Length: 300
Image (tube, rainbow, N blue to C red; front, side, top):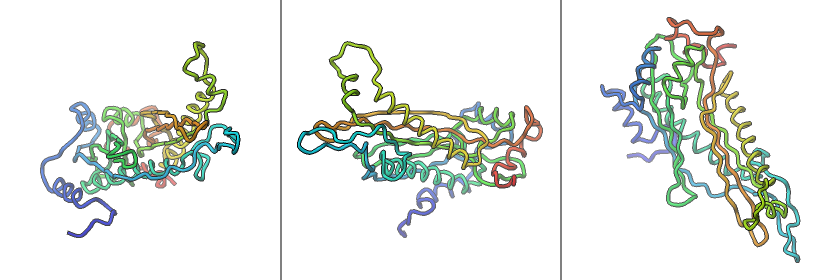
């Protein structure tokens, strides 16, 4: 057996989709209601598809930019919140790039499986990230159900959405079609300066806002939302639906008298393309109209 070069599907995945394409059994992750709803607008499930990648993340980039001054043990420079969206290596931008790579490769391999089954898109996609033996090695997985339209028209490119089948059908009745899955990721880091440490001290019995931490979580969510909107626009979307927004924060003890707080935000959703300008799409045309013009380039 020749060694896989990392392009296309892994051999074991390729063999699985070939068996699925030639066999009569069609697996699905859809509920009965989802399958019935999608069937009503002309979509049939052709198989359950998955893409995965294990990635080693060894270097995250630079942190908050503060450093300890010599001789007195004090912070000599403490900038405000630094985000990964500032470019270069700031705010752990290489770490964010690594996360994007993991999610996008998993999504690409899932769509390759769908393409091999003759599908037009994938619905109900679940995106997961699991840490393996340590924090440096992670598995990214995209899992969903490939569907094919019964009409004669084929879309310009495969679509993907994490929305359930019923929601996809409701959007189609309103003249909207999923264009693709979108993810926005951002990391922000802020040095715990004197005022932040005073406001957050554990022995205080005063209720007050910790201004530095409020700034940190606000900045990271805002940066992730900007990245989400930019990527939705590149998908050719006229609009986007946010399905999930998560945020986690943790402390880093960089050195004596130097502690930072880091926050990571992930925004996930679906880019949507408008295929009918009326209030509602004509019901008898749903089997063909959603598949025309889902690639915005065809509208030019």
